[in-house]
Structures are given as structure tokens and as C-alpha cells.
Image (cartoon, rainbow, N blue to C red; front, side, top):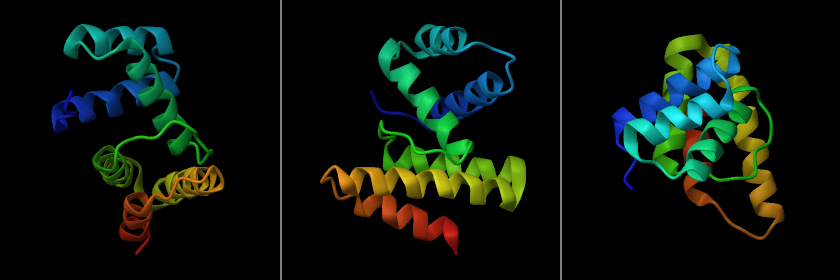
Length: 117
């Protein structure tokens, strides 16, 4: 399934609601499944990975390059430069994790560089 901007925006907004404890992870997952027919495991992974990124934490499950770029732009727009820096720390930790597991991620490194400048 292609993740359109509409889907990415809903993932972003739902993750924000989960992060603020206005919605449970299960409710967020179910909403994405209901709206778009997203695989339940993929919906959960997307919410968890984005939540970790927002919190500046390492995440293990990869988000697409386009999704990562979109989410970083939205974080900056909604919450400003300081929140973006925290999210970039999470992305950097994810890139380090992937590199340690033998997976090179030049696309994510490009996204990191783009949003770091």
C-alpha cells in the first residue's frame, strides 16, 4: 500500500494523540485499519516508530524515506526547531542501529542531512 500524504498526515496526528495519552495505541491502530485498511501490525509499528522519533529515542522498525521526511517536516511545523532537533536525534539513533546491524541507509542519512541544515 502506498502511503499517501493523507495517510501520513493521519499517522502523524494519531501518533500525536497517542503520545499525549488522548488515545491508546490500540485505538490509534484500529483507526488506521478502519480508515485505510492498513495491516494492523504495520499501523502499530508506524505509530511506535514515529513516537520514538518524536521523543528522540532509537527505534528499530524502519519508516519509509518519504514518511520520515514528511514526519520531520510536520514536527518542525507543529512544534518548532527544538522538537525537530529531538526528532533528529531519534532518527540518528535509528541510523546508528541500522548500521550496526549491517544495513546501510543512505536515503535516511540524506533525510537527516536535509533536516539538520
